[in-house]
Image (cartoon, rainbow over all chains, first blue to last red; front, top):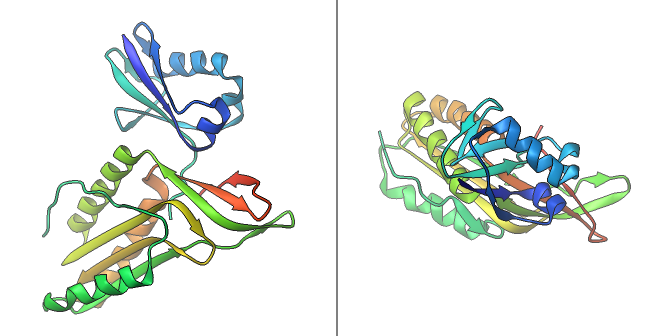
Length: 78
Length: 147
């Protein structure tokens, strides 16, 4: 399946990418994050949350269909 | 109670005092209102390690942020007896001293608006995916983080 991965704020700066496509088999959020950290080791330096199709999810969440996955650094609204 | 579809909360650049003034004026026809309460977030010229912040460049996961704003709005209407509520947040560059967040709640009675406004602002700070690049006078930057 194909995922759209979105990076925001300092994470977009770190990875130098704001959006990319990724092909993967069904996996958990934790497995996906591990994969992304291998690709962008600097992701290890920052705290971030994961949203799937605009909903925050935990590391155990299963990704089994095409989805938009967002890596969200600490919020700074207001 | 007022129910609406998610709308776009974001405005490009700073929120002007003209815009805020006009927004207040528009409520003169809503005569069941007895109390307004307004929160204005202003960009602070913090000094960090001898360097001063001159602006914040805001970005957001806009689709999710607008959904979150909508959820906050719905939850606030559930919780408090409000006549209306307006939220505007800046995107892009906002200089120190300029307004980046405008929250406006109105109710027949004053006690409600004090509580509701705090609830809305705290929820925005905690739950909405907005990101802020703090730009220093020498054009270096760091990333803002809500505490």
